[in-house]
Image (cartoon, rainbow, N blue to C red; front, side, top):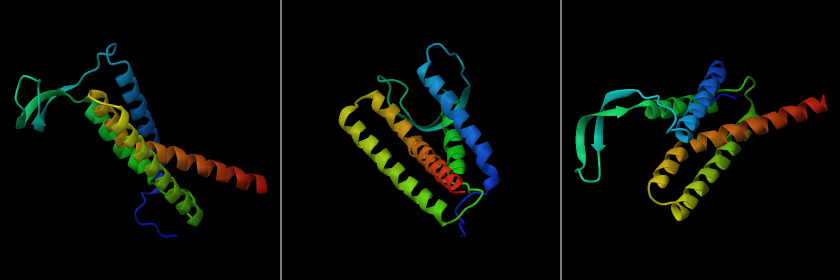
Length: 160
């Protein structure tokens, strides 16, 4: 089956390793943010910035910012996309169907999670959850796709 939108198979393992490593580091940084002092401060261009409640919103200027979480989210999303949408060793119609089903389930999951957050989470924690929603779609897709492929391979091995 010809699939032009998938990345080559050779990217799958490296991008998977980078994805899971970046996810692990982000989880550690967000759960232990008071005990870890790992920062990378840099001048970055900001379209909009609100430095504090008492100051006005600033538009289109350079600011000093800790960029470690932005870099990790960027790496996480790019590596997740490459890992999720890399070809399998044997790419056939069954794998395409599993990929489509997993994508549908991941979309359902992500929107149900978002709706629940709109109903029950308020304030700054809502923003953090929306940041997680950016990659939870990829995460759920990858987990479900790998799980179904694993189960499918076990069924085929038992038939032999």
